[in-house]
Length: 390
Ligand SMILES: *Cc1c(COP(=O)(O)O)cnc(C)c1O
Image 1: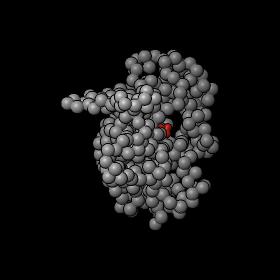
Image 2: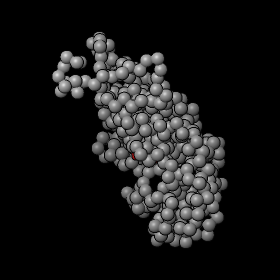
Image 3: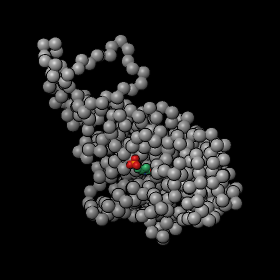
Image 4: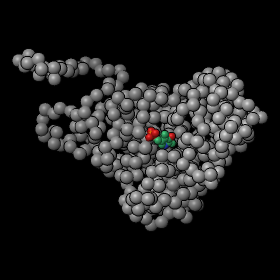
């Protein structure tokens, strides 16, 4: 390089090769593309998920490390990391569906997914039938010759309904329909849907997988290698790929997922039990409580019941608003799954697009508050929450 002028040398900094040792943590490969010495290797690597790294939209070593890590945890044959959870869901839906296809989805769906299904219905000629998350008979009755996939969520938001994954996935498999499971709320620490027959697992890695409220990302894991390759090709065309820095932050968070999930679950338990005994609270929705409709199923399916729960205040909207402006430690904010405890009023935020009838059917009232328990000390959380209650 010394034969070149400074302007040219500045463009081509030397890159030390790492030999004889390797970095302990996964490095960030913050590059949009890769240099080839052999044109034949470059040609052979185009359009393949298993060739040499070519271009950042296809994948990147840091992103691939995250894909392999989560695919391994979920028991998949491959994964595609994306720029958001909705990016993962859309990569799967748009990669597999065509006009005229039919989807069966569970009734209690994440808001963004519900909006996307409406979009597919209104503009792409795809039809959707909604069934309860725990009714394989209703799924069987809903499937038609043009049904392509069933979309489920391990634990729903915010009423924490648990899907009957073994029952629903078995019917889907028997009828030749792909099952897609959003495992964001449970993570592979509590549930691995592929073990229950799911074909595809999607995640918003924004939540528990990254865990520190500092990154937006998503990921789709495929049980079958051929399905992975098909959707990988589509993902390259769609361009919803993950950024290396976002993947690096997610990998860093993922290392403590096991510890964090234990604490999220035990904190949720601590708070749910106390709230259930409080006179200002009419109901607590957490599958670890015997009063919850999913209690029995959750006990069979999950070793822990998650860090998110909802509760209803007797005083309705006014009481909800008062509560939310009275907490000092818990933060009023969207999202969940991070180390900080967050609270939210679903009726005016995440579920604002639902009409009064749909809201009532989903069990969300004006006085419903969602709590995403963080990893703080449980006694500090309870003193904050109890001082904010009427
Ligand atoms: C947040 C979330 C999504 C969407 O993920 P983004 O990263 O916000 O795009 C999808 N499903 C569930 C269950 C979620 O909680």
